[in-house]
Length: 178
Ligand code: RTP
Ligand code: MG
Image 1 (cartoon, rainbow, N blue to C red):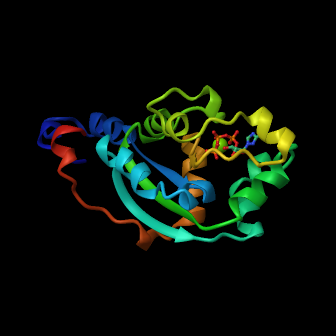
Image 2 (cartoon, rainbow, N blue to C red):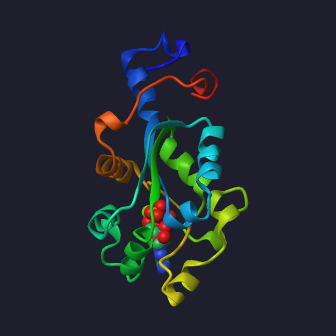
């Protein structure tokens, strides 16, 4: 565990505290990359004090996309979703921080951009609804992906990154943010 403030804690309390530090997988989808939003999006996570542990640009194939979105295999939008996520390169990165999974989803906003509040990534950079995307066969272009749960985060990080591609270091934020 980090931080001088945690010095006097028992092993049990320390373990509990450590559990609150999570990792989440974020992907800037092909629409976000093609629209030149990579820097804008990364900035938001840095601003919030989340630590970027690893990052890559990749143009994934159908098989990899189907594995990443396997939970949606039976959904009516699955084929369009796979088509969308493989239509261009994506930027994937792992962030770490306090309750990172929920915090990242909070910064990203709800799935359907038309429900996403201004200030969120989907709310600021998109506006279509999933209903419209479905009717038009668009594959739900909503700029960004973020892990939805601890289990999803663990599986996704394992799929996208080798252990040696994730780096442990101390950010200046750790003094003030976590
Ligand atoms: P993501 O996994 O990409 O972070 O998105 P999410 O958790 O907010 O939403 P999820 O339910 O996991 O859906 C995965 C992605 O599928 C597309 N989608 N299309 N046409 C549709 O009705 C529809 N619904 C979902 C979106 O790209 C969504 O992000
Ligand atoms: Mg999801």
